[in-house]
Length: 204
Image (cartoon, rainbow, N blue to C red; front, side, top):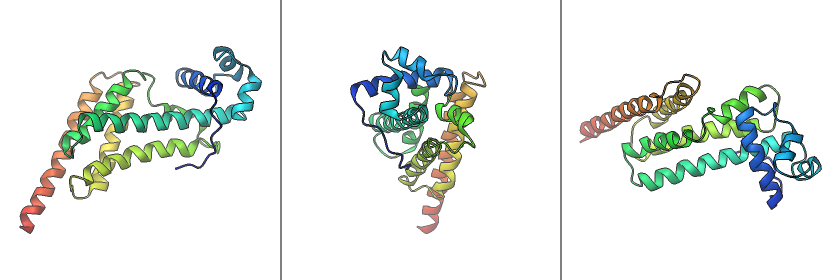
């Protein structure tokens, strides 16, 4: 996890960040200026700089907020809908993604941000990587709790489907993308279960 220091979040800072988050996601990091954020947050540019240090500091805070919100959303969704280990618990992450994307129609905010920040050394880049690693590791953990063999590789494969579904749903204009992804992941998990059971049968 990145160790970037976060600003003290006063009510005004929360309002600024929430406003900036919406604008950054809808219009892009570089297309949105501090003056517009100040206007829509009903504050001043000075207050933004006082709270976040710079526009880059605000971008980093936006990425941190979005990363934490996705982690919390996906974790809570899976816990509520599929609390017990099993194939449906893996599929529940995709269901969480489907629900998330219903109100985030401009694609993956982290991929969008990476397209603008790659190669710049921006302090928000480790947060983008953290989100992708977390999602991948989450799938690995869910497969591991089922005692699926080679869970690390299978989890990486599921994460690839997860990421591809986002692109196809949005940029690819494929409304069936999430259903297709769910079916493919179901087959990947079933293959893992079969491998586990075959191994158990051999040992027995």
